[in-house]
Length: 256
Ligand SMILES: NC(=O)c1ccc[n+]([C@@H]2O[C@H](COP(=O)([O-])OP(=O)(O)OC[C@H]3O[C@@H](n4cnc5c(N)ncnc54)[C@H](OP(=O)(O)O)[C@@H]3O)[C@@H](O)[C@H]2O)c1
Image 1: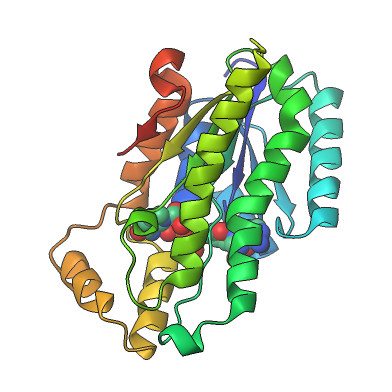
Image 2: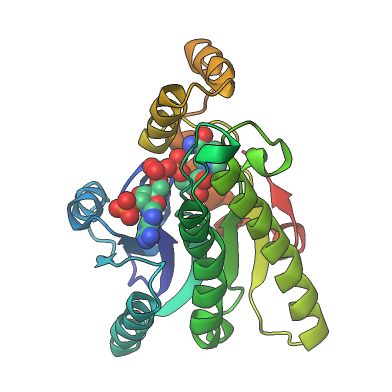
């Protein structure tokens, strides 16, 4: 393989969609930076990548400002040292605890979900902006969720924060257009639909223990094979990042 110069940073790369995307991108010759809190999970993803593609793990909590600063510094040092560039930024990490109704909803859970699902994507996009501006045709992908527009009982932290993420996506488009800078990255929102991951299974188990009604829909969807495999979704995301014309990517809401 030719020397790899383009890198993608994928948050939540230790499991599910993020892990599958890291594999898919590396298979297509893109170097990957694997971000998540659990070091072992990131190393597991690292071990499943094709040989010869540069990849490194960055075990950080993206909700923490100091972790984000350390991440940006170490990534930039490493890429600059090897003459490599950050071309793709994928805000895939996502959380949001179910609650057994209004009175059980913990405001702190919402705060945490907003920190991971909204504040971190904003801060990381800002902090990596100088690097993204140096890469030709750089792209930033935000991973949304359909629940943002379909409120279900007990899903406030997750749904509200994903709705806010979609609004952040709209906001950045407006701000980028106003800046009239022609070297800023293109932005897109990716809506994965239902994907059979550990994250979905954890959500289902937690929602079931709260007695939430949408578990019936999820059980049926999983049993009838309506949930996609993470690999299928990862292929669509990699296509969007690497192969889609920028005019189609920019400002789009994409689906697998
Ligand atoms: N699966 C679905 O049906 C579905 C549907 C719609 C949208 N989505 C979205 O798709 C994305 C991926 O979900 P998934 O299903 O693949 O779930 P997942 O396996 O739970 O992946 C989420 C990842 O985010 C990481 N993460 C969580 N908090 C973090 C933090 N503070 N700092 C760094 N990393 C953090 C987790 O790793 P650590 O725990 O190691 O930090 C985990 O690897 C999420 O944004 C989710 O909302 C999924």
